[in-house]
Image 1: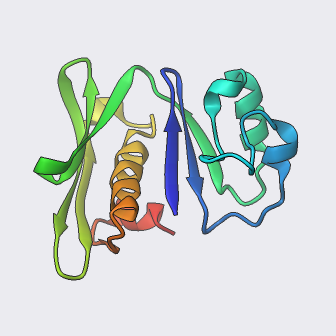
Image 2: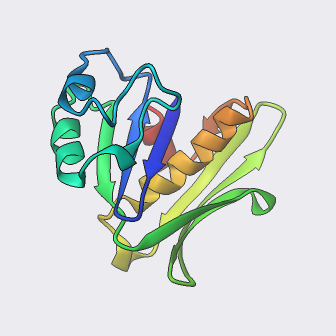
Length: 150
């Protein structure tokens, strides 16, 4: 399972397949990471610096974090994509096609001047999360998306 949790400043990514339940997140930031709550991650419950420090101690990298840099990611179901915007300017997209086998992610791209800000990761996670909520299998022919699914 792939999930992302965003506020205005940060996005926290969780890949459940990597998680080995070391519980460093739960002990490091118990207000944010509460296994008794659904969803179990609520980034509004503590300071960004404490969340960042806690996630940096995740031994499996099942939890990762990035700053949003003022970029918004929107899932656009009717267009079969997620798209990234800097204000109203579209700066990236992750495209998928619905087939009998599932959702096929075939393209992810971010404008070069926005590189290094994990925008592509946010785009892929958006598609993965919506596919998983729709109970659809995901196949990645896009090399970047395939890497994110590992």
